[in-house]
Length: 276
Image (cartoon, rainbow, N blue to C red; front, side):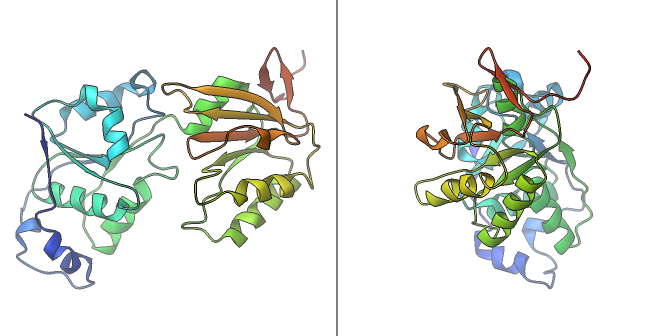
């Protein structure tokens, strides 16, 4: 039967996080380390996952991830594999536990939705390995991002230069996000917005729209996709003027066109510049 691991070494977690290394800790005493993979599972639909990710997730001994993402891939997890899951804001805990498993000699996959190197777990895992001077070199397995998935559902809005901006100010000051929005608008980029709104963050998407209206016409096409390439996908075509009339939350990806973006047959098209 598949097991779900509790952090048996949680009492010693503070020791692991100290700058000095503690020798002889049973959690990190194995001479032979396992393999560490940081895997992008894509938008959530198993069919949208890469073949390599699919194969590795069935071969590793341990899978660590946010509990919602573990549930998304539950159908391919074998009963003999161990899963380690946590809730929101527990990224450090998951990464530390995964490293612990690797040091015990197990092959481990840390999963992220979309691509692990884009707002995912890859950066955190690498930073922790660097901080603790652990020579384990993980393999990063790419995945389809929310932006790519939403773009495919909308048509071809990313055919020219674009930027991806997260509106979450949990880890990035809002003043920095505002500056990036201004630069994106000034540069006439197609803009992909991640984490546009949540129960506690209602105003950021309003401010983002106001900033972009300084540089883009109100009729600029906007595509709004909830649960992109995942169950119960919802697609809405709008414009910069009316975009806030649609439901926008943490499951939503918003793509705002550039000055050339247009709609045809309910699809967004940003011309690349080909002669037709």
